[in-house]
Image 1 (tube, one colour):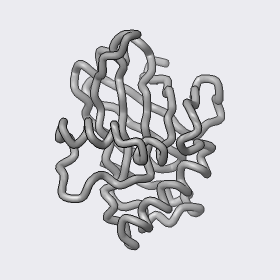
Image 2 (cartoon, one colour; image 1 turned 120 degrees about the vertical axis):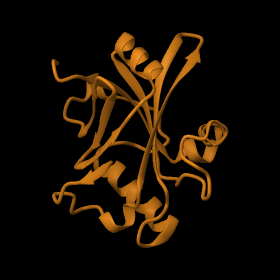
Image 3 (cartoon, helix red, strand yellow; image 1 turned 90 degrees about the vertical axis):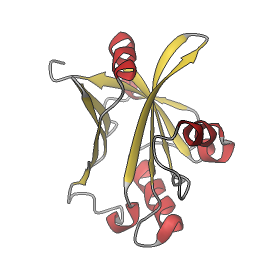
Length: 163
């Protein structure tokens, strides 16, 4: 479920379209990493191109550079991006845009161990006709250099209702 607060006046909300947040746990040489991919389905009022521009505007107005390296949100406490994790679900907030999702248990375990997740929020829409959650499409999408160059990359602390 995605909601947009009325305070989001700088971004044409009709152009954002449907937001998809996908979570998975990946293995790296440094250990397991909980990943989040956020992107639109490209179904905004002005189609995929309008959606890409609206997402770009959202990310840049939040202070997130696109394709320019990793942002460590813990080092920028005023960054309007957060991750709330509760048993069985999580909420990603970027400015006034909130998206609740149900991650797999392995992702929740990795977040619990590390205390953060690696967010990739791309301006590129999810491939048309592909089902969100399809593992092969997700792997191809996150391996696509253009998609990753059009993305904000953030190490995002996981907060809970207790923290």
